[in-house]
Structure formats: structure tokens, C-alpha cells
Length: 74
Image (cartoon, rainbow, N blue to C red; front, side, top):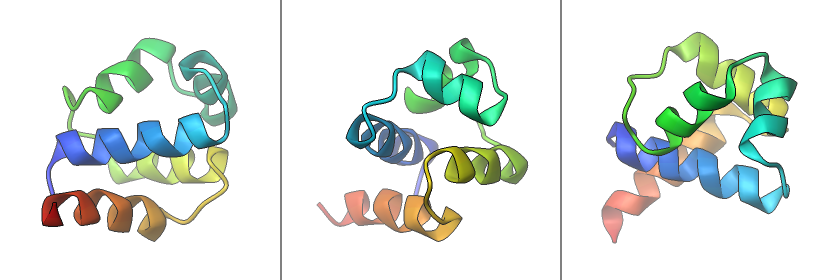
């Protein structure tokens, strides 16, 4: 798994919930530009922030990881 796939997984989950980046940022207490850079795979994301995102996305951290890992199989 790499940070690009992790970002794509987060974006997919956000879009499924019909959240904008700004809405997601507000829900998890992170900045909108940070969310964008994570989704583009430009940042190494700390586990604390993955946890915040999973809470805001109403999923488990493992759901995000599994989705990102499944992209490598393609």
C-alpha cells in the first residue's frame, strides 16, 4: 500500500457520503487543504489523522486500509 492509494481510498469514501473536502475537514477537525493533499497522495498521514478521518467517514480504520490495499491488486 502507498500513500497515493490511501488518499484515493479516503476520497472514494468521502464521495460516497457526498461530503465536500471542506465538510470532511470540518467533521474531523483538519484543514481543507490538508484533506486535499492527503487525497492526492502528497502527504504522509499520521495514524491520529487516519483515526479522525475514519470517525468522520463513519468507518473503521481497517476499512480505509483494506480499500487502499485492494487497489494494488488491480
